[in-house]
Amino acid sequence: MYVIVVGAGKIGFYLTRELLAASHEVALIERDAYVSANAAEEFGSILITSDGTEPTVLSDAGAERCDILISTTGQDATNLTACQVAKYSFNVPKTMAVVTDPDHVPLFRALGVDVTISTTELILSHVEEELTGGPFVHVLPLRGASSGIVSMRVPSGSPVVGQPVSRIKLPQGTLLTAVIHKNGELKPVVNDPELAADDAIVAITPPEKEDELWHALTGEAWR
Image 1 (spheres, rainbow, N blue to C red):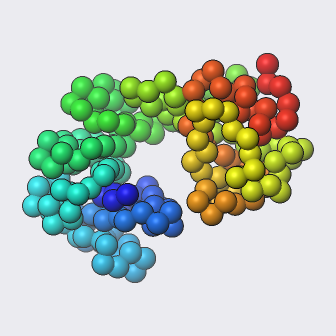
Image 2 (spheres, rainbow, N blue to C red):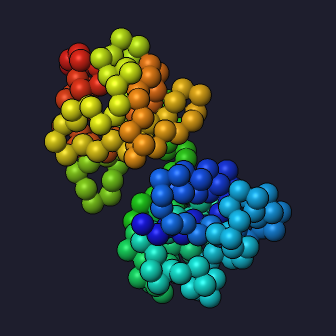
């Protein structure tokens, strides 16, 4: 998969690193020379120091063959514009944007951005899950689909501790997308990592399959 990431700040930097680790082809665009210089040592020739909202820049980055564009800057206007140019000038199949102001989310969706990631809404969802005591954090609903992205921590007594992720019998329609170690290290699923206690797993699953996913990861009934 070929991915263009706009913005080399913290989100874009680490996202690009993990996409490369998962063997995806990536171009990273950053217009701020200072931020770009900090990222250059890590990413070398895939880094483009220019404006990711400019059609000529996206063309030079290969937007014509891009599978997904993800705009991660701290400026909502920049993220919206980058997605708009990618979709309507280059027919990029999928666009994603970080949205800092949750009031802007409906506008992004109305203007055709496929996936919006509101940092405020993500934090609130985590707070709500902690208050309600549910085992899953509902990270992101998938627009136009019946599934959502959820995360949970692997309990210390779970039968999957010490097992590779390929051994987990996931419910039908569920896809494990990431494993995050308690120290924050991302374990790419493609490497079939062994699970450890307190690892966070991230999965795409239909809401009605959450009970089965919980059972698969803990050996216990949730409700």
